[in-house]
Image (cartoon, rainbow, N blue to C red; front, side, top):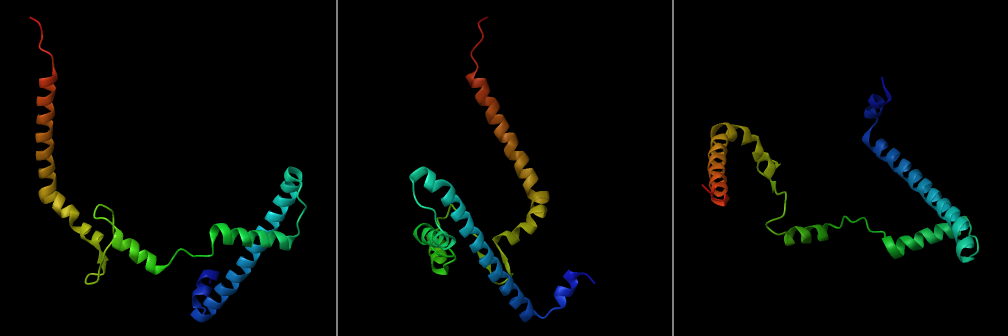
Length: 150
């Protein structure tokens, strides 16, 4: 039995707890990593370039948090009210995906009939259009040609 198969046998609440613990450890690790990167970059560049003093890890972590607040914020960009406002403001010319509750599919669910349509009507319509378009192009080409001197 592989690890993946064993993991699927673990009860769902225990999986959630394990993922939460791993997430907290990863967030803490990334915090340490970013803090040390900021300290290293600051202590390497700022004293040499601007004559500023070196900083400690906690000062680097504080600079990272301050920069995040000032420039990035802590928003997850998943505010449902702003999404619904954007959807209401969409113009008709933009792509949108509308859910059809009856069939459980969106607008793209109708594409399953495309092959049948193409075989019955589409190919003939396209050939007719291409023929008509080709004739119009040929007529335009003849009109633009200069008459030959004889």
